[in-house]
Image (cartoon, rainbow, N blue to C red; front, side, top):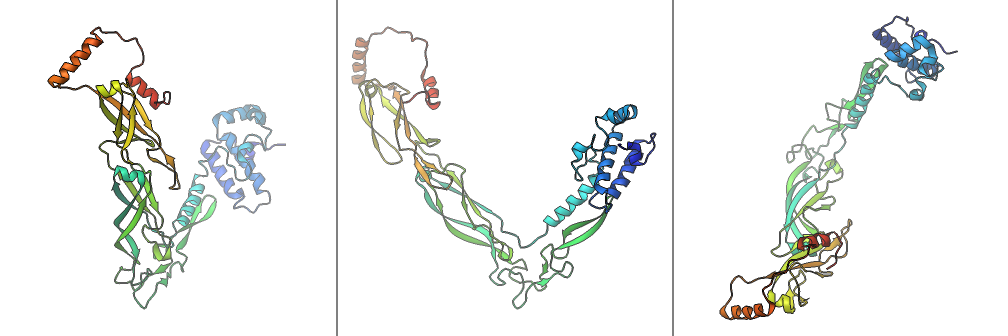
Length: 390
């Protein structure tokens, strides 16, 4: 038969919340499986958990007082709180009771994680600016920057010539000290970095005069960096191991080269395609022509069909930007898209005016309303959405 919850906690039925909590604290300290050697500690702890979960909740307690174990949805031990308890590691709905316990454990873990051995070197960042063409074909840049390097006098150990670091006498070289704290569950051991050596486990008694005992110095260095083809504005090129040198043979940090691309006079970038506008005159648009178009690969001939209108888009395949993979390699190139603008002359010579007047007589002067349809900007939006191919 399940025991009465009041009996489990050793309290009267008139006990208030504070008495219930105090009783639970006392029994949890006594029977918690991690600290108790009682042969039935785990079972008793589950029973205590279940009783506290019910009696600490006003609604559950009222149902229990009226209907007994049936009123709280269980048959006693293993009922109301067992699903949440999940064995000795479960705490049901009373996390507040164990807050002090968990804070102590977390504090110990944080203290242990702060233990300092030789620290790895920090990363460094350098910004470089390249031309639009260099972003397409790649470039080589010589960069100069400052970083922490190993002291060449003490070889990074921080001690003057003829001496070496000594073992810290407070932590005996472990880099950490242990402190005992009292909690409601008993004594807890907290691990913290040694205050004397800062967690390193050793002391520099006779510091190097060149680096003041740090083992490293800030120096300027020059490197040649390869900028891969196809980079875009803001891309970071990682150069492993070229950041700050680590302490006492610890790994070095990395160098990150942030690339900035200058704007081009004619070209613009869209993903892996190059965009540009080309202006042609009305005669070229009406009669057609073969024109020369600039590209990043040099001048290219482009055939303009007769009757070409403003907004026509021509695609020159394979003359765009290399597709840069995550490993720095390339997989083909995008295209160059040429937007046609038919330019109307603002001024005319007498001969040109005479020719246009003759042309006007043959074309007539009637204005033909255009049927409602998709205009130039609609066609451009369709093109970018992939619904229209130039």
